[in-house]
Image 1 (tube, rainbow, N blue to C red):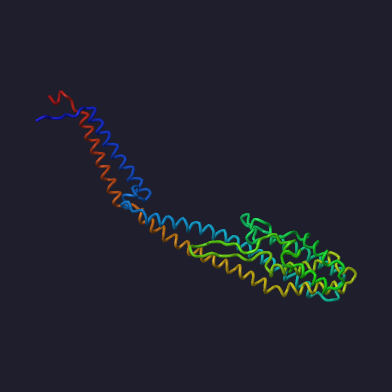
Image 2 (cartoon, rainbow, N blue to C red):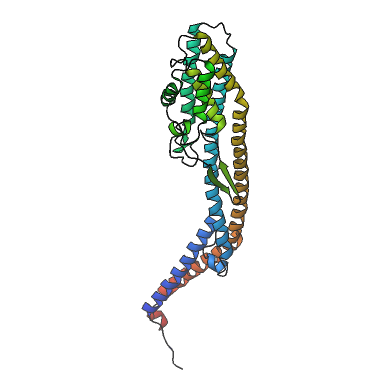
Length: 336
């Protein structure tokens, strides 16, 4: 019988290959034990990764919906804060204008009108607010500031009411300018620079909200109208006729108070959008948690089996080292 001996160099290479193989196995098992996930996912799923890919895709989509919902939540909160400020200002100014007695002095009339002009500027500043570089009340054109300055509006109105001699005529002229349709040279053309329609935001797998409230919405426009009408006295309207000026201020105050319910309804509309967003966020978080659990179940490594395999690999490595040690001590003299 012919014996095929193995040389020392060949044996060294064989031992080195065996050592590297066991060490690689131990490194893989150690990583699985630390991460809790199998290293060979394809082998674990027997090549059928379709379910896992679907779960991963849904998790990614839900993450995007979550980002959309968070952005929409910040946007609607900004809108609600601005509308609350507008409503508070309009109510306060409306009460002071409407409830002041007819016997108010000319100085008080001037003070009230100047206060209305200042409030108009403050309200426009609120409506021109933005969140995340998106203007809150510009509709689809959220990259455009919705309103011109208070000075621009009052200058345009001063031209409209020039020469009018009664409070009713001035109030009507102001109302007509604010209510003029696009193309007629009124508020929609001179003061409003935003877009029409609403901002669409997909916030869930089957949920999309539309934010239709803009600075052109009737409730918001009527608030601006009342403040602007009262500010006309400060711009010289009805000069020299204190009685008509008082009537104009009272009419403006009444319009502000009458507009409170529509303005609150607009706030409720935004509040409903906030409720939908919160619901979408809750549902999205629950769905994501469920999908992550399913994904982890497919990818997780069995800690007990991994520990057993690691211990077995360590035993094999120790045995191999013992064999290598014994082989390294062999001598030809001992053999002979």
